[in-house]
Amino acid sequence: MIRILIFCLSLLCCHHLVARKPEPEHIQIQPVFGTENLKLNTYYLLNNHTDSILIETLRFYISGIEFFSRGECVYKEKNSFHLVDLAKPQSLNISLAGLAGLEYDQLTFNLGIDSTTNVSGAMGGELDPSTGMYWTWQSGYINFKLEGHYHSGATKMQQFVYHLGGYAYPFAGIQQVKLPCKPNQNHILILALDYLLQADFSAIHPNIMSPGAEAVQMAKMVAAQFSLKE
Amino acid sequence: MIHVPLKLAVICFGLAACRSNSSSFEKPAEWPEPVYDFSKNPLSTEKTTLGRALFYDPILSADNTISCASCHSPYNAFTHGDHNVSHGIGDSTGTRNSPPLMNLAWHTSFMWNGAINHLDMQALAPINHPDEMGENTAHVLQKLNASNFYRQLFYNAFGDSTATGENLLKAIAQFMVSLVSANSKYDQVKRNQASFTAQEQNGYALFTQHCNKCHTEPLFSNFRFENNGLPIDSSFNDYGRMQITQDPQDSLKFKVPTLRNIEFSFPYMHDGRFKTISEVLNHYTSGIKESSTLSPLLLNPMVLSSNEKVDLLAFLLTLSDREFLFNPAFAYPKELFLPAPKD
Image 1 (cartoon, chains in turn brown, orange):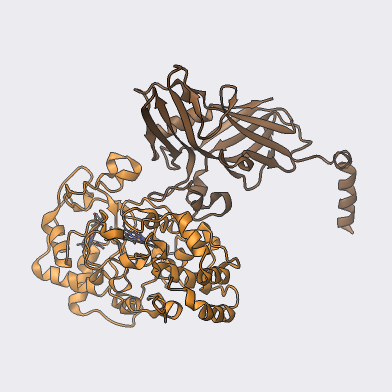
Image 2: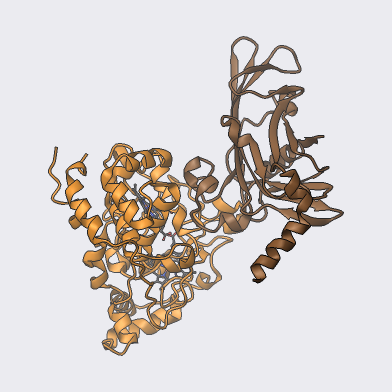
């Protein structure tokens, strides 16, 4: 009996929603160089107009997606862990059921995996360690993976491998991103990697593959490159 | 492929095993609560069986030659008998001595430097290490998913025949937590089922005085990282815990190992530098190398007469648990793997 009542009530309350049959909202993640959508295994000219860069791997975790309205959380995605992989187009699209119709003014998410999840043993799905986003010689998720090389002039090549992670004090690598955000069917989340195009070869750190101060610094820098295209 | 002809046996096994016989972890009375979170990986006979098969199967290595048991042999308290540093794939050697495996449900971290934060994650390290098993996890899963033998075992254990990283690791962890050693003479004395000789009793008193702060009863480790005064071996330059925390205060600190079954887990220390327990005792009385991170407990030289060393040794031998070492439930799973016609 009570169930039926609740059902009728909810029908009444959500009447206009039901009528509109809202599609789930999406976050479409789009890594870019300037105005160009980034493609893997493609040469891009650097700002110095002589050298170029090629990205072979771009994978990262987005977790803890929340929407806020005037400082109050109005939507918190359950089990919010997404492995974004530029090689897998479907992974760039995050569908958020139950968000449509809510009022909000801010999106927050984490670049990376929180420390509790990092110390809780074997996980499945996107968090399965066989995805290659988990270090093996030392416990911990790799929050962000970027691999490729610079092609300098005609011949010289410089590989770079950035595996950013770390969950333990003082080198926890997870970064929170907060962006102003209006209700929208499809949020385009831009990750602008333009800083890579300003390569100064003498200053480049070609490899960061373990937790530490450098990894944290780079994670902060990457996290600051997200923006929403409204 | 040694397992292919086993289909029949496996099918019978599968029929016999009704899904998930859950079992509970038996904590020895008087021991602290285990650290391992069983709620996230509820024990079952089928999962432990799968874990045991995986532990003994070289399928986890790149060329199918090395299993976990190659370096962790049951008869050596699951360490690598006679090798100071472990010996892996293609005759490569690592830089560390493989620790004995027992009572792992109580450990707060794994590896000599604590690099691994959870028992589930431990197996990833050797599987993916180029000098140990030289594999990668995704490829191991492919091999397991191509094996009817394992598809059946995964089905029995998890209700899903597809091997995933999560289930692979959880199964191996279940076998490892089952390796409980709690029936040494020491344990029997504690349970009033046996009594120490006068010599053992005196050794116990010396132990309590000199060793128990680090090798704390009843697990014989406080699971902390300590510098016990070993001079650094310049061929390895192993600074231990500092590799993980990057904190100079952790330089030369290593995880305190258990002393249970110490009689069988030679050679000793993280690099296996000592072959006998007597050498270890001599280290504590006359070999301590001072450094800024040396444990304050070892700053004042430990004085032990040769008789006292004999007594202490007699006590350490009461930590041997033959029931554990020769427990058929922990041994090579013949009933699963054999008779294996060689082809």
